[in-house]
Length: 150
Image 1 (cartoon, rainbow, N blue to C red):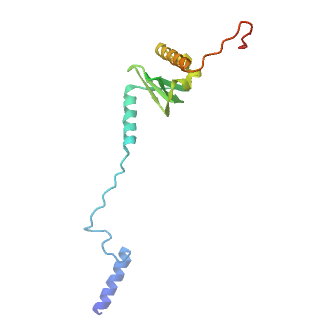
Image 2 (image 1 turned 60 degrees about the vertical axis):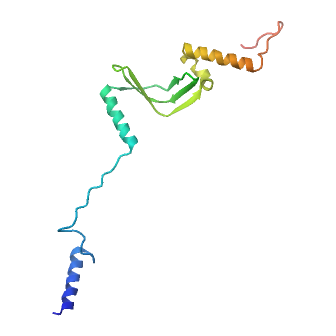
Image 3 (image 1 turned 30 degrees about the horizontal axis):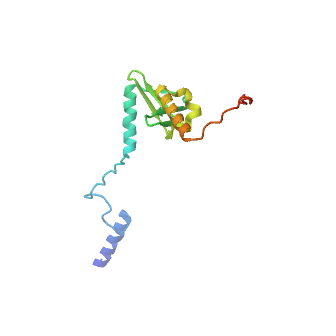
């Protein structure tokens, strides 16, 4: 056999064994591929840490709460619709999570009057006083006319 025939036979054998023209596809002496580590986002990590902390506190879910309102000193309200509410009574901690909106107090007024405290009622009286001064005077009813509020 000639050298060319031997070289061709070797190429065919390498192609048959290793599946292609490249001779360094793996095997003895090749570098090991490192395992790719899937990194977690920082928000996922913080959610996991928060969950473990809540478990340590012994927080339990409170079902059936439709809305939660936080009243701020500047007259705004942080309003949660259908929040997830958890409580850890021993730690005197309540956890409210979910989508929230910051709204002015006037926007939520007819529905939240029963939730207002002393500070909020005083603030509400100041707002109505300011609106009365700047706005039009309320119309008065003459002596002969009746009020049709019924």
